[in-house]
Length: 315
Image (tube, rainbow, N blue to C red; front, side, top):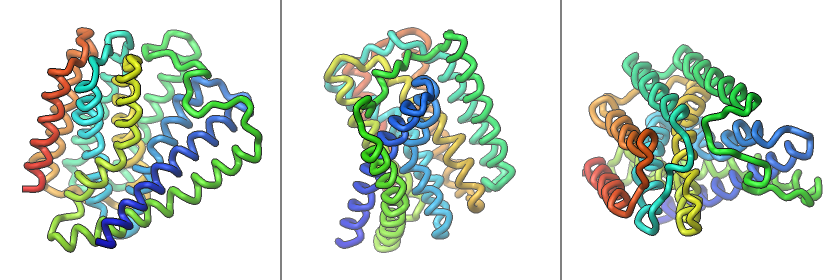
């Protein structure tokens, strides 16, 4: 029982620390005069993915790289099937108001590149350079679009950035940053170590633990945000957030973690999990290109597909 409690504690610390880091970094950056668009494209993206990044790095350091790869692949699948599926059960998500075609194409290309590199059998420093190089190209293109005021994404004015408080004193900003920087590695260490213990107790591979327990846990912030947006009828940006998060997971998290140590690719990924992730990505095509809304019927379908995937994994 204790490993489950400690895993839960580690996850809670991770989520709170990630939120604290984003809040502190966003307010500090805006205080220093960094444009809100640039903050949203970089600091918010890195900050909201900090739990996944720390878990992946910690897993590589602890000698369970399968958990790192499972976390990223499982999170991407959960982001589409679970994070978009459950809110759609509550209210129709009007995604047609946000043009995410360009980022969607980038995400598909990133997925194909990622799977192509996986055929080498390991994500090493060479793969890391390729992934981070692709990320640099994507961010460079986003910066260029932002400065030309011709971005294909939803607008991200300063008032739409989560956690912005113009009256927040500097000492509180520093406390938020400190809590985030201390809490993230602490939470990652707790979660990875105890998730590994759980895997051994139940005879489950660290890869499956990464694809299920850790992936769902690290997708909870996105799920909570999307549910609230759906209830407020402001879900038009949910699709863009999921697409951006998935692309960042593939290029940045494994790119950075592979520099820490090699990440061997379990053959099981090639047989099932990569293709489930890619198929889930292609399910978004009608919402992105044809302006379909994510109705309750789609919510049921996405949720059922995710449950079926979990059953297949655990069986």
